[in-house]
Length: 237
Image (cartoon, rainbow, N blue to C red; front, side, top):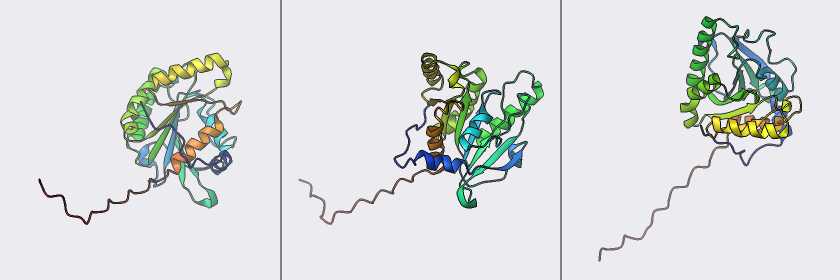
């Protein structure tokens, strides 16, 4: 899976990106896609297995301790949560916290329902512009993670931005972290993969810049039309 990974030339100072993320506020929660409000601003979804550190990642990026809630029981949180972003009360993007998946204790019926809800969201949410998949580097991409990649692959090929964050990278030494990074890059089919640690603040500012760029794409200037020549075409010999 491939996606554009380079930061745009207009990448802001990390302080600007972090300040923008700090404006995050709870917007709404819904059990299904049909209950979410229709939005025109770019939406960036965070997904991952239970215990992958998704809530901690969101709270670290937004510099808020309890914006995203982590349930004491993994797999218990089963709602789509939206957080608005934007200064001076003007929303210019939304972060989406999707429920964690893969927790063994969750009943099969609930697992199946949430597979449908998440699949529907990822495939049909019109304003979804990017997906951040969180993964424990000690486990690598699991079967469920790879299923999720298959679900969004068509949209990635159409321009959906995609990033894998190896959370809790502070639990690995430098050699093992580098090895895990290379393995997941291969698993992700060439997609963008980065090491991340909320504890050590590793990768925080770089990820913030990615989010900013995804929410504020630089429009390419339109090509000027070619000037028509006033001279008549050469006569055939």
